Figure (cartoon, rainbow over the protein chains, first blue to last red):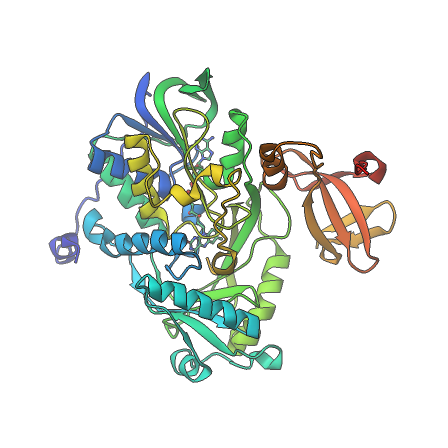
Length: 413
Length: 88
Ligand SMILES: Cc1cc2nc3c(=O)[nH]c(=O)nc-3n(C[C@H](O)[C@H](O)[C@H](O)COP(=O)(O)OP(=O)(O)OC[C@H]3O[C@@H](n4cnc5c(N)ncnc54)[C@H](O)[C@@H]3O)c2cc1C
């Protein structure tokens, strides 16, 4: 339990210190510049300082910390992926997540819920069995369950789905969890800052300088800073950064939308995903139903949200949970998802010396925040891809060595 | 609802169309790296993008040029413009 709860719980008031200071001038040189102050950028800064003693580091964030996809996601954390590479990677992250509140001395509201991926067709059930076997082989708690089991755990769901597409079974992943996304970014940021890392909000990278094939620094809207290494951790803005270097990648940007209902009393303690209906839902600790779907149909660099999304989502949601027809949607929003053709991330070294990528997080990168930070910090410190991210290297596309994760990542988040 | 103002079939809701993605031209006679780039890489950054859309009710294919920052169709493209010959 975080000690602060005990320390301050009984006092009537205390001054909450700022997590990080107001802006200050940029230095002329850093060993490492991290572009993007989302969860990934902050986690990378934290582990660089904590595990590798590299503290001459600046995180440059064009807006505010966690204002990108980190603060927009539906916070599902799970490790029941389809490929052995993915399972190992995400499970390392899940284990890191479980200890984060203590590491940070900040409550990230990590809440283990149990995660159901519903199968409405034979082929979906086949993929579930495949995933369960891969998962179990890697020691992950994951199994295919029948309708009776689901009915017991999610009693308020219409398993016949209004007769349209009855649920046949599900993949059940007991460790599936949700967490408070902002707190994850803030906890990492404070930990990094306390170890000497500089965090500059409202500082946009506008160019990357190179000499030959080597990075020498970054241009920002606050001037030039020289550096030895640059890592891009900007999720939905990745192609804007890579195009500064003329580096082509398979990443395309699609908006991903979500919404929450008005808050109601807690009744749902599980996470329910339907790949066939393209919807998912969990209940937040504030009582809102947090709902999402798959990405918008076409490329778009925008965080606008649309009525089409809510209409399509609620249509399906009411089939599963008929009583929700009486609930109001309270808020909706969108983030820009950086999607790859194989639904796996792109991480590590690039053909440009000193330029590193952490991208392709699409609709599934929140759960990867701790492990990405940790493995990218290792990769920067050693100038070599960490073994866990080697399968996700950019060159997998020219090596024709893809990591087909679509069956587990496209709607499941 | 978003509507496309199509020169052939008039104003139609976007929900009648399938998005098929960026128009790309295969390199034909090229090494593996160029083929990999053709198959996987995409324009990615915001700007004008030429893309295929399929109109389901009429079974017709269209190429539109769209501003992917503002989500505005700039023009419908004559298919002759994107046509290429396949080597015999
Ligand atoms: C609606 C929605 C639901 C999701 N649900 C889930 C889920 O349930 N589970 C899950 O695991 N994942 C989920 N995701 C995906 C997840 O949110 C992201 O993959 C993850 O948060 C990416 O984190 P990040 O730190 O890499 O990027 P971000 O949090 O997007 O941070 C990138 C930062 O870079 C900054 N930046 C960009 N360009 C520049 C520049 N030129 N200079 C300086 N700064 C710049 C941006 O302002 C931004 O703050 C969801 C995403 C969305 C949109």
